[in-house]
Image 1: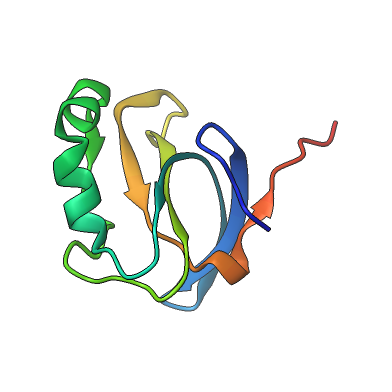
Image 2 (image 1 turned 90 degrees about the vertical axis):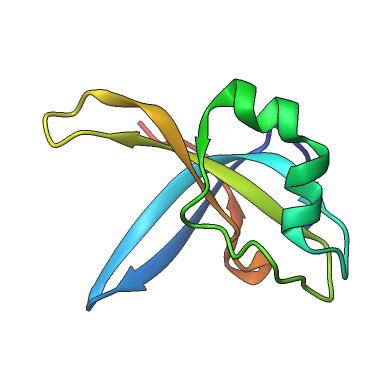
Length: 102
């Protein structure tokens, strides 16, 4: 399923035996065979303006199909939102449109 900039998406990821559900917003559509770092460099002003944390992005790699860079808002242990957001480059097969349930 193709996603657009501004779409809210969700996926599950795991580390150290713990699975977590992440929810974020697509901020960049990455074309096939283009390193995500090159896309970030061309959007440099946007990325700096929005104050993202690059630690979760595989900077020099590319993928054979269209993929998406997703920004996830982070919160402190007390539940307060952090000033920065974290960037993720999840596998497209794991992404789903986010639908909030009450």
